[in-house]
Amino acid sequence: MRYEEGQYPVPSSLRPAYGRDYRSKREVQDAWDSYCDFIINDAFHPYAGKKINKTDWLHYFISYPRVFIRYKKLTSIQPIDTTNSRDLRKEDV
Image (cartoon, rainbow, N blue to C red; front, side):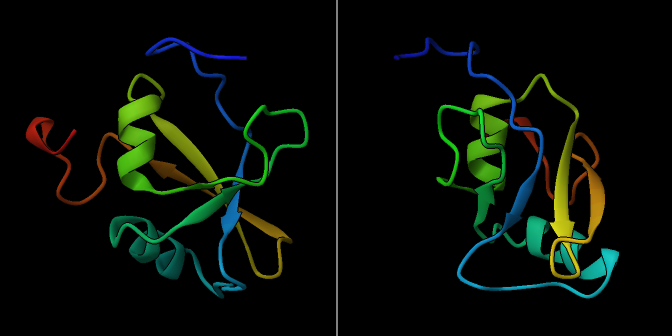
C-alpha cells in the first residue's frame, strides 16, 4: 500500500532501536531531541518494526502533536509533546 503525503497512519507507540533502553523520562526526552532512532511498536501499522526518528515524525506526522515512547524494558510509556520539543523550527521540517 502506498500513502500520499499526510495520509500515513499514526503509530500507537515507539520503542528504542538498537537494543537501547532508557531508565527515566528525561532520558527518553533527551534521546528524542537528539534524533535517536526508534522502532514503530504497533503490530497493525503498515510500517511496524521500521525505524523512525524525530525528523521522520515531523515530516510524516507533523499534524499529530504527541508521540508515545516506551522505556524501562517497555513497561512504562512517555508521551512526548512534539510541538514543544527542543529546536523545533519550521525550517527543520
